[in-house]
Image (cartoon, rainbow, N blue to C red; front, side, top):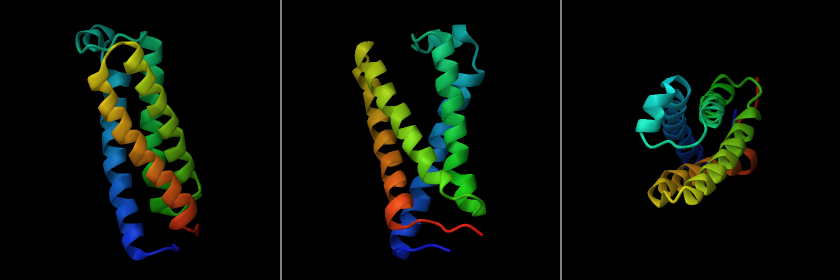
Length: 130
């Protein structure tokens, strides 16, 4: 089923669930909220960029949980985590360029969490498929 320590395995599951919830909430907001409400919430990026980021976050949230949880192509979980790490690096620079330094904190935290999941599920506690 898995290799690596049980403690790391459990910690990765906690990280996967927390990250998936955060990415699902953020992705849902960016994907389904009308553009004028996004602007009122301080999101100044073009609507197409926000929608693409939202869809990426929703797909990433599913990728953090479903492949590993169902043990169907579980190698997709560290791939999803790595892709979300890239999304968070881009989010970090977007916030910096917009002068929104407070917005960099969630990007750093979620980016680090995603990188931890990618490393852990790829190297230290991978889940084997069925």
